[in-house]
Structure formats: C-alpha cells, structure tokens
Length: 305
Image (cartoon, rainbow, N blue to C red; front, side, top):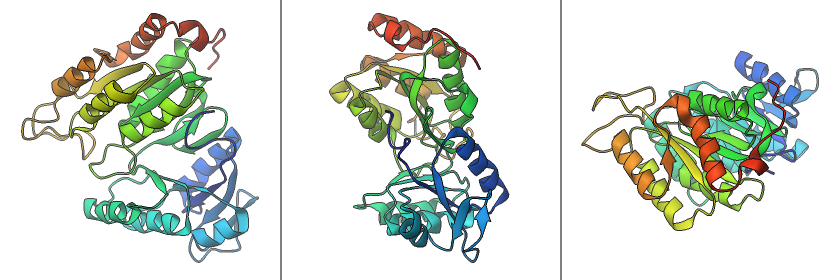
C-alpha cells in the first residue's frame, strides 16, 4: 500500500512547461503516475506531452481535474509562493523539489501551513516514490522493487543508494521518501515514521540521517516510545569537522550539537542498529530482518535491474 501517495493520487505538476519539469513528468507518466494537470501562469489552454492540460492556477487545475497531489519544479524565487498556492487550493500532499529557497521564505511557508491539512515534503529533496504506483520528484525508478521495507532519508543521494542496496539484497520497498536536508522544511522523520508505523504493508523501516540539528535524536525518542516495527539506521557525515556545512544547509555541527556520535548514540539507546559505513546499509538491513523473523517475508526470489 505504501504511504502518502499511490495509484489513486491525481497529480498536478507546478511549473510543468519548464525543461526539467517536462522531462521528469514524462518519467512519472511512464512509471504509471496519474498526472492529470500542469500549472504555468499565462499558459492555460496548452497541453504538455500531448495529453496533459495546462492551467493558470492550482485552483483551476483542481476544479477541472480533481488533482489532490502537487509536485513543484519551479525556480527558488517562486517556490515558496507555489507551495502556498497549492496549500491555499487545498492540495493534500505537496512535494517541492526546488533547492536554494531562502530560509526566510520557508519560515513564511511553515507559518502559513500551520493548522492546514496540506502536508509538505521538501524542499530541496528527491521526492517520494511508492513502488509500482506513483513517482514524484527525481527518484530513479529502475532501482525500486515492490516489497515491505520503507525508506526515509534526509539525503537525496543516500535515498537512492540505500534503495539500490536493499534491492540488490533481495529486499523490496513500499515507499521511499527523501524529506530534504534544509533547516526549515515540511515533514520530518517522526511524521514519516508514524505513517510507516500505521501502514500494513511496511514491516520495517530504513532511516538515513545526517549531521546537524536534532531531528535524528527526536526521532530516536519517538521510535523508542511508539514504533512497533524494526528500524535500521545510518548517519552520514561522521568525518565532518565542526562548523563546516556538508552538502545541505541543515548539515552543520555547531555549538557542540548535531554530531554523528550524538545521533548514533541516541539511536543505539533506542534499540536501533546503525550501519558503520554507507556500504554496510543493505547488509545490516538483512541482518535486522533476520533477527526479527521478517527476512523470508521481505526477501524477493528474483531480482532484475
């Protein structure tokens, strides 16, 4: 079944007439994603990829097509307004791929979304993919195989890497989601973990964190108190020097907080095994699944990539 998006999602692509948006919309369609509309102001009446109608606003697209999920591919200076437009129209799930959105813009977005039913994934994230059902964002489709392990990650590249390792180990996935690494963003680990905890098809979760902030420590406390399924972890940036930003705006150790050691300790104390290296993530997942009697259920007999 997966979480947040699936075969019943009706997708509107904001910024669809842009080169990257059109490219990724085509991949989404080929994967089976139900893309029903696009939005580019001033381009209403056009079509993209022969069949997708373009509207001036998200409200117009929703009214005409019943869209309930949005994916945003617009430049950083317009992205915050695009998120707010989608939420104002009543979209359920908004996925924002855009990077380099000013922090103050995202503060305004977070304030606007407070109390709204709209859920935001991102920004500066690879998106979300529910296997064989729906792909929103940048995630490469061919590395995913349907199964019973959920993936949540702050790192885009490591989302792909851990998914590939799981697949090569014969472990399929339900939904893979990159929440992004910016300091001010939408969903955090706890929201995603809670959804996986409720999903009947997800039997275990792979959680990839990184240095900076306290999201992983907070997730560890939540897992210890509420999670009913095994979680396997990895923390990137273990060699990062204090005060140096590593990749993401949120990946910085400052004031003696946010170190990899702190995060690994918190996860271990919550009963979560953490892979020592990137290369060990898949092997650790297999080990934990076997220890919890889930390996036979989660293992796929034939793997073709």
